[in-house]
Length: 309
Length: 309
Image: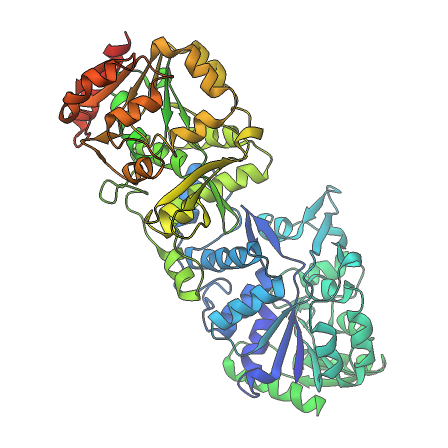
């Protein structure tokens, strides 16, 4: 069994490659739920949805998020009514949230609801929310000092605010979701996907028990850098690293992951950091990590598995 | 000010006529919320929506419910996912529920949310939910003895089950919505719209204080029969009356409304019941009540106002 720790888009792309080189039923994805929100009464899990849509082949490759062939009838009407429409909910995407909300209101846990959705979408990879307890990523704007819910920061304010703090409300009281710790303990290989280390992996690591479980398996674990040539491939990871006092480079990320993984995978563009990463006590593999094509995603998945075998 | 007590479709049609013969800002509609439900996390108020869509000119005249030009992208996907889709939520209709849920989650009362929606839809008639407290109409199936939520009975089971009981859960603890009692007290005229007396008017009358307020204004009040020639124009009113032991005729309805109204309006087809209705201590007006055309709706509104002047 291969366990992958996942945020959204980058992790989804990595998984889309991974399922082409290994049996999907042998893959477990532990997914960040710190971005989850209840909006207009609907329970929304953005990272679970991104991973699911991608693995189901439903992802919109033009926008990089949402569902292919999406329409916006409900959202357009909501906007016309004067309702809040900053968080775009396509008509097809709405169905996912309606279904999840329906299942949760019937008393299912998020894990159970996620498994129902997974099966409904025909996804072979096992999807585990990091926790069934609410964990809410909050960020503090450096400029205003105001604390924002993650999606307010990320979507409503287009991740423009620079930050002075990130916290994971509820994390200390949360327990890992069912099978999260046992999957980590029994995995042949553990992969930290190329996701934002602070707000995608951060919440997962903040759930008591998960970091310890990962540290115990460090020898079998690898991480792929989401930073390439000093920049994030997507999203605010670079700004966030800087804001929180980390070096904005593969080395900065390697330092964050050194306790958890024995191997760190970086892009050719960052080959000059190899020695410094190795000096952290990690092996460092240099390959193509920018998954612009399916071939590169497949190749990256292969290299990742090789590094672990 | 004219106050109308309203269920869904019949009341909406009556109001659509009424606004053509009197200034909409002079009309207050007190609307049943016993059919309201929280579905998939969304707060849905079917009677408020039917009245709103009709007054906004958005009602689907082909189906008799929902929004004109409706599409079903979210619902079709929800069905494909295997989610519950027995309660049809069109994409445009969803926007209403998203907006209402958004407003309620911000802490607005149902009255306040209803007023926001009313203004967003450009409706001049004042819309008052009967109560801001949850009141849930429940029916007991005669055959199975099982108690069903109203929408389960009405929509999911197409109001096929015959009933042994109807109750309004929460009604005893509910208080009338803001301005409900004062509107009734100060109205020049009060009209009980042609709605189901048991499950549209029943919940309104069950909220403590409303029946008393209506009785005090009986001399200024009129009801329009929803039963014509022993049948309901729409929905299960006839079956329900029979199930609950009432006569399935204008006379059966007149008996229910006798405490509240001084005048009862029936269709020409029921003219032979006039004397029996008058024997209940009510005036009885015979006119066209089947609102098949706008002309008839306008004429019925005129007759209703004349009866009250």
